Image (cartoon, rainbow, N blue to C red; front, side):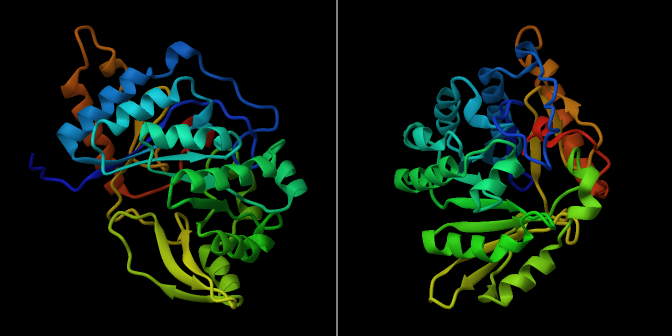
Length: 322
């Protein structure tokens, strides 16, 4: 089939549940969880993915949450998505349950994982995540590599006064283990908006710190990519890729084709949107999915991406999908 638009990348939040309460993501007291009836069923997610593949040249799907490994029957969803012949099928996780899930996920058809790793000090990691176990995340990284879920990418949200002093050790950790580390600017969304002025560290500052400790050579930008990527080489001669995701200081809206589907069925073209479009009703239409309603929602989400990006949305990231 021939399409008149570039391929789309879809991030699908499969749950609003999470087993951590990271400082920049969820309030310490937690959040009210949506009912199971409001959450998209696995079959509805598969229908939407199939629709995007057939009508809009869908190339990539990434499963997110909350914490996606908390979703019941996740392996069933991965098997179904893998059968759709997508160019790429990935998952973002905090790694707490990955050690036991990595091999079953690979057998189900998952290709690779992104793992959140903001710190290497167990005590500070526990405080930042409000209860997370660093040993479990490190075990998840090792299990993902052993299972062949590569390249393993490590996501680090940099916060001034919290973990900005660890960017060099984190880069060295990644190079030593053959992982790609990506340093993310904090976005003023949800809980992070409250401390954004205090915590924000630009990608340029992080890159400057790394450049003092290792050689950085810029690599060619990939179309539609959210990160600027460098080849890093440390004094020990180890090399690897280091990425910088800069939504605040260097927005990448120009050729972005990323859409987000929340766990409750709202379609977002951009994290800067205040509202998304409900596609759950169209997926649950009597007699089968309302494909024209779905197509209109997708076109609207893609149009909004070109209207300029402002972080007006105040919803929590755990509800949007990371």
